[in-house]
Length: 233
Image (cartoon, rainbow, N blue to C red; front, side, top):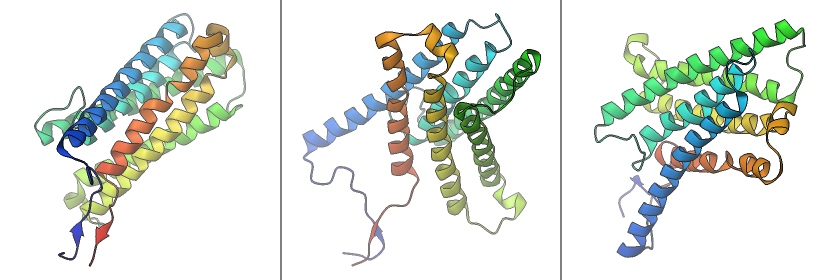
């Protein structure tokens, strides 16, 4: 066997019929993750009743940013079965940029509404694990965006890191952002506001729902961008 041949475990040991079943199951999981992200955004937006208060816009903006746009932005460049995936790689990359830009705008808007709401109510900031993890998520989002910009303008900026290494940093940071965002959304469901709106079995269902797209996104990123084992003998 030739040295330095990249090894991928996908489909290893599977017959043709089993391999195609595996492919379609992966596509179904990707579509399910996208539908889940859209559904969570709609449910949270309806529950928050936007316009009734300054705070009501915070969950709307944040769910739009992280449950919808971040999910779509990652899957459109890492998953063949994505609902919005095009045959052109360049088109998918542009869609990724657009979704990531929406994440930044929506997250900044949601943060502004939260700060304004706290100031009007004269309540303290950063008083819960949800708020602290939210700040970490926003910081990681900015770092991920910075790596993305460095990738786009790598030649103009004359960076010492190679493009492949920047892609690895960008993908790894994206994985961290999504995991932090998932935990932040889950913690939001323990808030007094959410528990007053949703009770019983529906609350448990919504609590577990964000975990499904997180598993799918994590699998897609690790398979598409993170280093794979190489056979050297």
